[in-house]
Length: 543
Ligand SMILES: Nc1nc2c(c(=O)[nH]1)N[C@H]1C(S)=C(S)[C@@H](COP(=O)(O)O)O[C@H]1N2
Ligand SMILES: [Mo]
Image 1 (cartoon, rainbow, N blue to C red):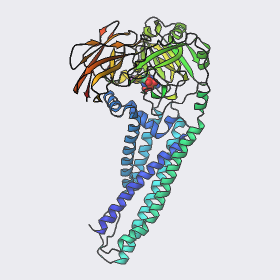
Image 2 (cartoon, rainbow, N blue to C red; image 1 turned 60 degrees about the horizontal axis):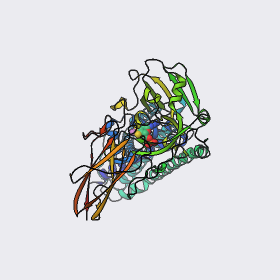
Image 3 (cartoon, helix red, strand yellow; image 1 turned 180 degrees about the horizontal axis):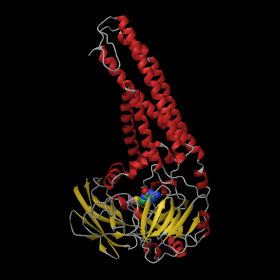
């Protein structure tokens, strides 16, 4: 390799680096300016959220299965890598032909703006963080590339002075190579200016990003307001949990899921930050009376408190996307009674502040089940990531068609006229929860002591109720297990079963029976389009 190619390659690598650093400045500055705007006005959140909205259902479930609740972190890392690659290419292009590079940067800015402006509730001022960020990035790139060209020029002069060797030209930017080793220290000194500029830009980018985050956090005092909320005693308190709802088998999940352990599934890359004070729910559509409800309206009303088990349609057989909490809320039945739906309406489309929507059959919200606008979860205001200040909780339906968090709009409509978020992406428009049981002990592939082995788990069939759970050990006969006490048909029910086993490899299969439809189906179904089904099989070792 000659010094000529090495110098050229070196500059190309540095041009790529300049591109990446400039992109960092775009994002950092936009983050800083964005602290004064809604989260979806920042490029990262706007682009990430747009990406999520275009994610096909198979990829969503792949992401959930692979990364679990870290799916959003995985998305951010993937975005970071993609942006860095694009920025590197733009840096190289800008180094070779500035105008093309600059055009590329502006095109990227325009793409980000398109993402920002198409987010739910976007307004023109939301463009400001991206515009300022892109301008800063463009200036920084210009500066860095100029330093690089200056370094190249200096090297050329030094090299030709050091050795009058044959000059190797190329058609764009003439560069002279040298066989003398003097060229190398020449590069080092002349590139110092570039490295200083690159370092300064990188530090500014990082400081802007960090400052932006801090500022955004400081500007939102929602956490404090949330913590100081107090709720009136419910008009209808939760029936006390019967003794013995909790299985004594070690390793079986806690009957009430603590908020911090509750699964979280949503499309919100940045958790919506709503204030209870400003919250309004608009009730409209095919109704005789349209109206709005405030948070205070809810607190002033007769609230009910219930234990309800929530389940995600993306939960695979044996999976963990299910949890039980004590919810406090206002019956949706009352909301609809006041609105008086018109004949022909058969669905309520609930929409969140960030544009998610769910289609819930109207009769489900009018019958005597405890479908509520929930304001508290396990005696606390809703955690931000579980829908603060108000979300829906509807017993018997998967979350994607019923459990809208950060809910701000209820439209009474018809299935024929409107499609909800996931129904638009290949999922069924109706989603009753399928009867299911999960073996929790022994864990798959666990090793347990020989002798009496405890098998334990949980089963759910919201609205129908669990009447029986059976296990088949090593493909033997089905044996009914001991059911723990039932809190209600809307909560899961724990179970346990003791078997004596010799050392070796064993399997346990489990199936639940509900009070309405009988034994859960053995037919294996994937989560798409309306929930997984099939009997779980767990393999374990007795040692
Ligand atoms: N605003 C909003 N609400 C939402 C979702 C969402 O993506 N956005 N996801 C739904 C789904 S798919 C489920 S399973 C439940 C999960 O509620 P959790 O995160 O409190 O467990 O919320 C539902 N409500
Ligand atoms: Mo879900």
